Length: 592
Image 1 (tube, rainbow, N blue to C red):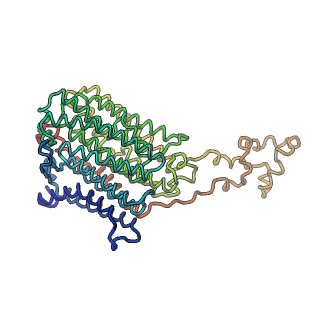
Image 2: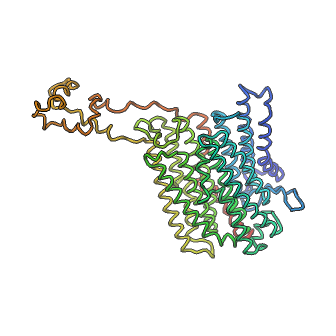
Image 3: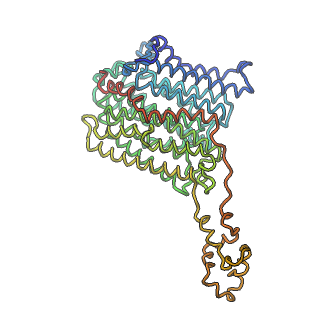
């Protein structure tokens, strides 16, 4: 069933435009703007150009999704297959199915929202020309990763995103941006070198680099030893990008230093490339090798779930000087652990849960980084202790709509039923309860129990963040100081503010023995509070100044993510109806 009947040639053009369009737009962004399109200044013109190009790509992705045959989501559609390097049988092979289509639309959506947000709030740094060009190159590489069906093209697209993200962090990032950018590029490049060796091994030993042919062959053309080596080599490169514990240490630094838009794209899109590679390449092409490493992958995944949650709890505690962006970055380590656990089960239930969790994480964590960036802009810091502050600094009181959105994103991230974060984690745990044949059921049920414990830790640190940032921290002295004001003459002297001068204990202690039974000694534990005015209403701190609440451009950028988070939570069949037939086909060796 298709919502709109679109011819195959138009579908091919749309997919090619989605992949190549941002690249052409990046070149155009570096050229001088035509005189009639400059607007108020050249910077505004190039930012508007970014919105236009990403908007056109998003429209093309939506039309592609509308024209997609939803009755056959396991079939590759909108395919283009052109010989590129005949000597190596490398082909420009593009296509989408129910696995790649949601990721394609998610990438186009998040990039457009980032471009829209940047138009109204450009990041501090060099000229916007390079910024817009880098974002468009990043979009092109990411979309190509989800659309190509050739192993070498996949590697090229996989690597294409590294340089733009490096410069986005290094040129437009915050403190420690250079060290974070170098760490990001070194980790991912080293992982990619190993991955390339594994991809070449698979292609040369099987005689083809075509991912569809490899999935149909289902590893029958590769010996078990070759599959094991290939999964180890390719898996390391994919695990770095995911990121899997203990190869995750580049992620918190990169997120903390990156600009808001960079963090949104890094969490919402780039992390999905690693897990997509596991599903698209390793599961169907090297099933025996995956079965060998599945228990270890699951073990690393659940360690990452617990480790990420404990790191978030440590950052969230009072006095830890934890950075809120860093906390959300560590939460991504835990959430991506659920994705890896679902893949490691090698079951349709677990893999579908992993793919659902991928999309949910992109929506929710993308929204979280948008919100944290807005909070940091308003407060000038993302330090949790500063954000919590005193009673008057809470978001609920100073920017109620922003506080409500942050609370919504937090409860969505912790997996509240009815929101998108719930289904992926639940299906992943169900898949771990009954793993694929040949995998140890007791081991995976242990992993399931550890993962379930991780959901409790996730709820704990997210609720702590909501309490501290949205509600503020109430200090006890401000509540107890009114008890120090009563004096023995308060009942008979209406002008109470002068009363402390008459019975005051510091003046003549030996001439006032009758006051020993009065409440005056109660003031001694907090003598510093006696200098404050004695009327209880004036003891509280003055109300903190209001912050700018959600602005119209912020609402425009965030509303689609909120709506899709609710839609996916209430109607999960929208995604599962696409992914399940494609996953069944992959796991069954190309048979629908």
